[in-house]
Image 1 (tube, rainbow, N blue to C red):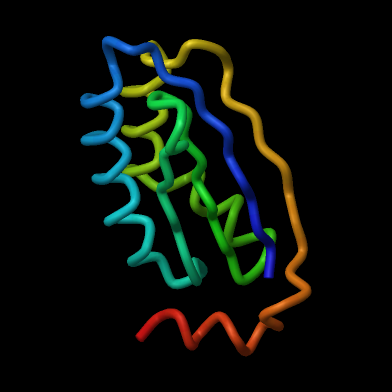
Image 2: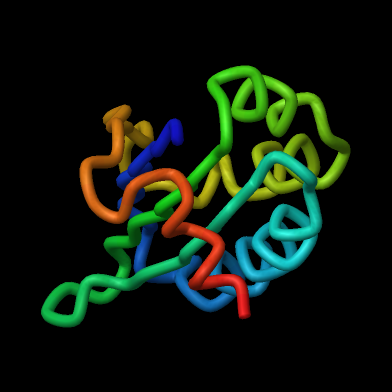
Length: 106
């Protein structure tokens, strides 16, 4: 699996609009063939700080995600809402192994 954690800091006045836009992106993204999980988290002690946990089957699936219309709409819609540029880290899974991700899909 190819896992990306995206860290986002949103301006206080934009938090609710950011949540709406991001939920729309999440709902569309989890329908993509190459995505095993797509989690949207808000930091409990700091509203306005968010993490996207994107679990792709391959690095190519991550690249393909950025070509989708729903990602491009989201990217353009939320760009002005950010307090600072978003950042990310890329990870490889240790546990669960690749076959274990399917258990979370239901």
